[in-house]
Image (cartoon, helix red, strand yellow):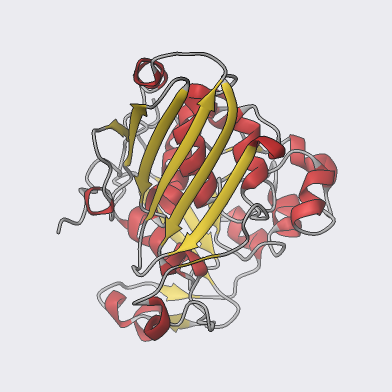
Length: 334
């Protein structure tokens, strides 16, 4: 198992995900920061842009991504969707890459085009490993490039993975915090409205749907997905109402599926307060009437749903212990 420190860089440091990626990498005992890049804040001390990081002797540059790759062992891309396509293609095979955008999460170019835009590098989609450690760990460990899951998608997949192949239909309502909308404010994410409001959006049209159906082994017509905006900053809380093809005990399947999953906790009642700030995903499985099951789950969208999962993937890629640098992240309670 490798124990020498590695050099990590973040392209797109100034968004919420990039900043969270930096926070977690700084806590990792086997990582040194090589580059932090942004087109908007070239040659600025990071503390000038974000005063909460004023104690760090780190600067933001606009270093070319090929030079970043030469100076790094791993590059994290915290870029908007569609922006990472060409950069991933340039870096693939030259340095280990973990892409936090949606650009390589789907291995089918037609499906990607349906939910996003035509893909510039469709052949590369099948070469990039899908970064869900709980059920794709071997491929991640052997990969040069990994695509991090979407935050809604990862929670829903972890909820449904133990039941994959047994699902007749499933209805999911997932409530997310405002940080999932990114740093740029809009009418729908502006805090004075968000702080006392809930509303659903992109019902049965959300871009994370194909990630969910692929893992659950269902078709889109078997899923109703209701993403909902909640009045808090961090976290996603979801409830899934599953009708199964057979009368089974769901908790037994979940215990088998997650025996070796250090960040999945099976609990009676998931709560956001028990996971926010950490890389944990809490799940519960309650047998309902007949062949129905109620599954609930909670995770921090910026940690387990993004930067924490990316560090978990990095650990697998470099042969570190999967929990390295993450097991110190206790939930922020209260």
